[in-house]
Image (cartoon, rainbow, N blue to C red; front, side, top):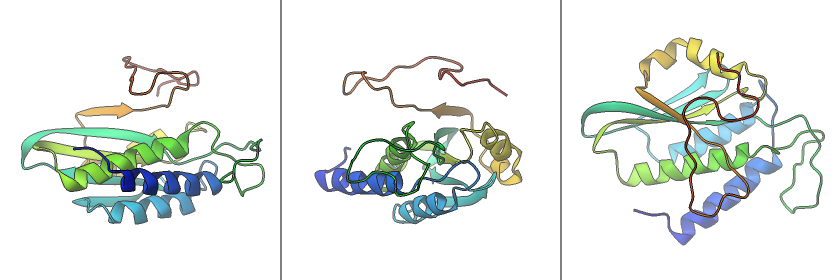
Length: 184
């Protein structure tokens, strides 16, 4: 199963919309709303909102019992002015998606499209859109939220774009990867 050209066109437009309307850590209400609206169009079996602040999680249930696999991305942007003149540049003064979080959200929304068309054979897949990643407060807030216990993942994966990596390649490493990773 793959994404269609129409899917790519729609996802590109959504990424550009997210890019134009960045929100810093703890203020991701509009972004969370856009993500929630997009996810509702992809029929999750369960949709949790307000996780650890503005976090959103979509749950896709498989036919048979199995592990729960969580994929996480970030909702927040950086308090940095975007340079350049892209047609879809930030419309919020002093704030920009300059760390790729708009792209990360779009990757998980693409996965939601695919999961809506074909549920996992077994187990559950959870797509988590985490708030406040840049301040380091969001992960702890999500994990402390009582609703997160209902997700209870067996495995969790985060992603980060890597400019310069050839198209179609994925790099995997256990443990913290990004330069600001400090663990919890």
